[in-house]
Image (cartoon, rainbow, N blue to C red; front, side):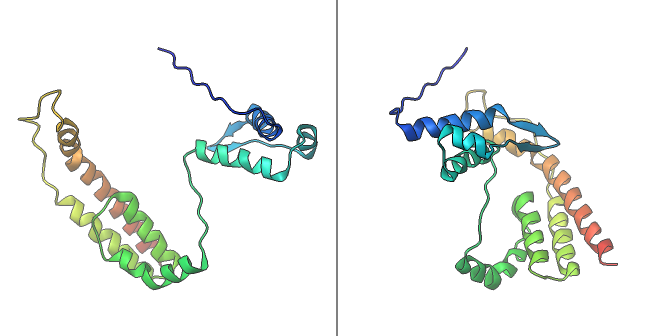
Length: 178
C-alpha cells in the first residue's frame, strides 16, 4: 500500500525561497561513514533570493531527520549541573544509556576514574542478579498485556548483556587510570 502525503501552504515568496533552498540542499545530500552532509554556497543563496535564516531551516530539517537533538547549556543549567551531578551516581538501576550517560557526565565533571569505574561495576552486578524468564502461560495473541509479557521475557537476556557491557566499561576505566 502506498501512502501519499500532501502539504498545502500559501505560496508566499518566503515559503518558495525556503523550499527552493531545501530542495537544493537535499539534492546534494551525501552519506559517508555515518556522516550526513550537504552544502549550499553563496551563489545558491543569491540565486534563490535567500538569507542566512533560510539556510538555518535546512540545518533544522536535516538535524530532525537524523533524530538527534543538540542542546546548549545555559548559565542556569550549568549551575544546576555543577550542584547536582553527583546525584547521578547514586542510582545503579535504570536503563543502560542512562547509566553510561551518568558515567560520562561524572568523568566530564572531574570525578575520580576509580569512583566511576566502581559505579559501573556495581550496576553490572545488579543486572547479573536478574533471574530467568518463564515463557509458559503467556497471554493470548490479542491480549493488551502481550507487549509487557514479551518485553519481560527478554529482560534476563538483556540484563545479562547489559551487565557484560557495564563490566567491560568499568574494566576499561580501571585500566585507563594506570
